[in-house]
Length: 70
Image (cartoon, rainbow, N blue to C red; front, side, top):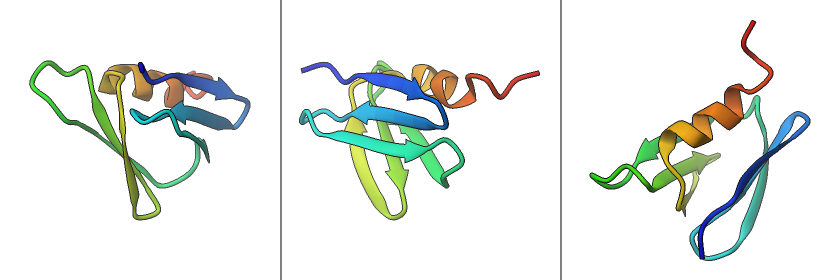
């Protein structure tokens, strides 16, 4: 199952590699890391909880920065 990511106002909804959905504020303390050499998976850590997302790092960062750039 491929992970999904979408912006919902001040929130980001992410579906992890196991199909679970996570919703967090774009202002949350979030850490995003590449997990593989192909750079098509990422690890997101929020508040001490980590989950694998089957999306590239750049795509997740773009969703977080959407609407922030001037």
